[in-house]
Length: 169
Image (cartoon, rainbow, N blue to C red; front, side):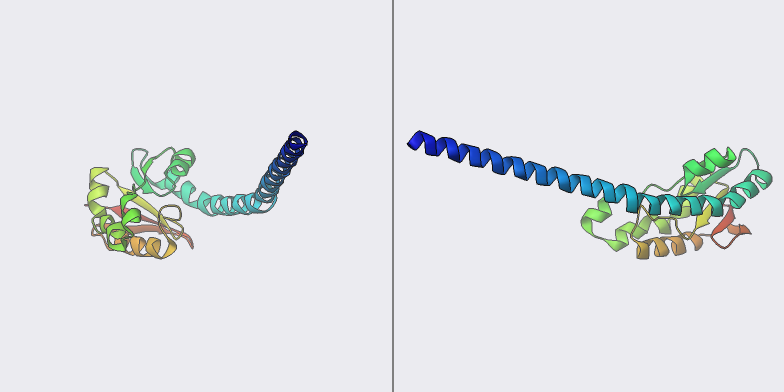
């Protein structure tokens, strides 16, 4: 009798584990379905919009800036692919995020012209969306203000979403 009870108990445990596994798999399928049908189309639409907005800017760069110009661009890969110009972006250290220090996060931007000189940057392409994956939105705005406060920046082209500055150290 005891063995029968143990066998039945094991069957119940196995059935419970099977149901739990099925529930986890169903949840995973629903999350994946939502990501593919709701979230991914929104991201793709955003990228398409950004690409359409940036096209005239990249065309202007291709027509007006020297082939050997070094640029700063948050979307440095797109800059290279669209214009053939070399571009770099500003590396953001993860350490200030661990310290939860706004001052540490923004400090490198107050010395941004040092970075531009080190990288031999001649032009900057700035957008309101810059920093979206590196910084919280409020800090991205402050970082942009610090960049624009650097000496030696001269505006040379502007659209509703983008600005190009020449950098003369």
